[in-house]
Length: 92
Image 1 (tube, one colour):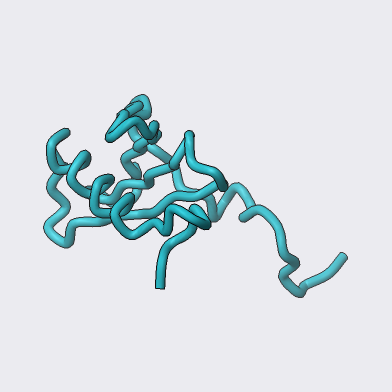
Image 2 (cartoon, one colour):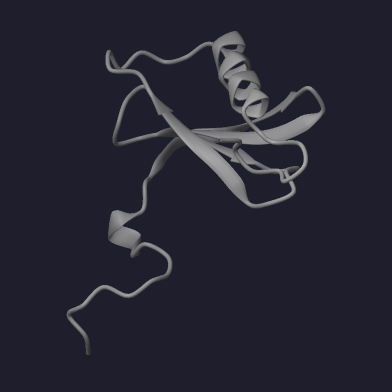
């Protein structure tokens, strides 16, 4: 048994827990799963389901308030605007 961390998935005790059912949101023809973290109010994880690579991003509000659906969609559009269409990754 090692005491040193190894690459891979986070152990379950370090994985985030989520509140409620995930939202499936389509923005500009791209599908995202949006999950609200149970342990950090106002914090969301976005998974790009139709992207060319497994990709996503997180977002948190310092005041802990929930985001509205239009706000979630705006953040997704902001993310997509940063993607290089040639590579499918965040641009420089």
